[in-house]
Image (cartoon, rainbow, N blue to C red):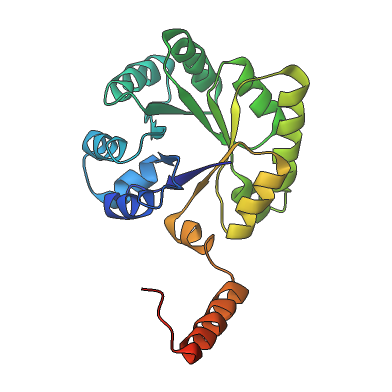
Length: 217
């Protein structure tokens, strides 16, 4: 499973990329706004930190605007993936980008039918928002299962990118459900390393080793 960071914090991305476990990065207008920086500069810097896809989202909602902005973003770096909303115009833009060889991430997916349309439009990734669905009493993880079934039934190449991840448990559940990738807030990414029994076991091993008085070096 590919693990992406959902962040525009360059320092945090650089730190976690050093683990060798970060496969890409996703951004959105809200994260860019919080950074207080120029969007194109932020995207270019992030693209220099990770080799994998970096999703950069268009702000336009009309077809011509999406196409113009998407082409501009795609020109920032080779690993930019243009992020478009799952709307009629967004899917039309996705088809155009697919013909031009520009990778796309179709975002704000909340149904299996929407995901099917994204795949038919040639999307590189589709981002179902599982956390937001759960917030509204729906079954976010069930959506991942349904999309996986549809994509496997018809041999669609679009990758399922689980988004709106809230917990480390969400990541594991998405992997079990068949998601190809998950985009994760940095704090949640850090939680993937942790388990109370791991910490407890390590403390016991270190205490027992100290009693031997030995040194490996």
